[in-house]
Image (cartoon, rainbow, N blue to C red; front, top):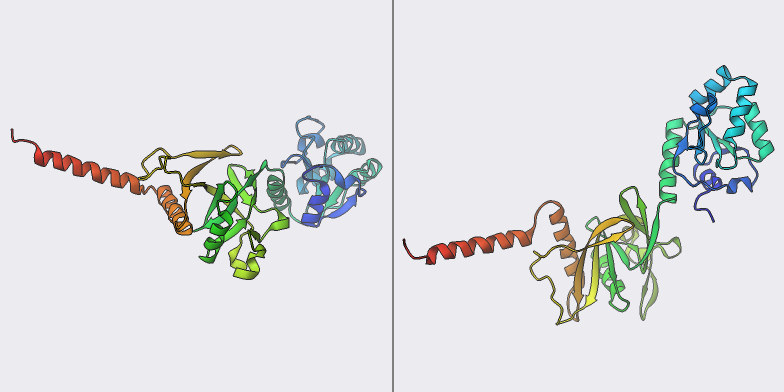
Amino acid sequence: MPRATIRDLLDKFGWDLVTGSPQALERPVTLPDTNRPGLELAGYFPDTARRRLVILGAKEMGYIHEEMDEVAQRRAFEFLTGPMTPGIVITNGSRCPRILEEIARRKDFPVASTLEKTTYVVNNITNFLDEKLAPSFIIHGELVQIFGVGVLICGKSGMGKSEIVLELIKRGHQLVADDRVDCYRIHNTLIGRSTPMIEGFMELRGVGIIDIQKMYGVTSIARQTEIQFQITLGRFDSHNSYDRVGIEEKKYTEILGIQLMDVEIPVSEGRPMATIIETTVTNFLLLKEGINSAKEFEERVLREIARNRCATSPDE
């Protein structure tokens, strides 16, 4: 099943359909780029743009009506309505050329029109398709917006992730996704959201499904967020060597080719996990601003050691 079709674009932007049956509207759109067919109208037919949605703006329409005879129009429109091209959108409220409409009806090819300006239409199409066609990945975990930072909380089942997130929500932070996080890479940004079926809901063992928005208000949930940071929860192991100072090399995890700082936090009975996670996120924000508390502490210790050495060294 295609991830984007001409029907999706019509439903999203409310264009007027000029030609095309319901079956024709299922033609797949596989690229977020559009084609302003100046070369094709001039008689040059490159293969590189065949899979792109064709946009006929004011300049193209002016050239068609003023410079192209019927033979040239038929040749160009036969090419532009080929089997690999998803469809044609005519902007600025221009009327569909008679020859194009004739060929499109014969081929059952989708042609749409809109009153919007060309630049506006192209930008909207590109933004919509960038998101619709973005590479995606599903992660088992929780996604929360903490102090404006999208934080992915991962860990094995039974670690209490949902209970910790519920405490964070009570402190004013926002739930994005519970249990399943849909991740999308849009350009160089990793976006996370919930699948629509369970958006705004959480599952708590022993309680069942709860509606976060109804319980904690509309500000308690966010539809999506940029994922900037990952926290991995694990059971406390006395034999494990945890980073106690913060000067060890930071660990990173990769999702869809994007590197995220990954901090491992041990979970044990009685630890205030919501407070610890808030503190971890605050420290992450300080690191982004170039403030490294662990490094400052290390430098202070080294200065004190150097001072003590000078004080205890024998006089020359």
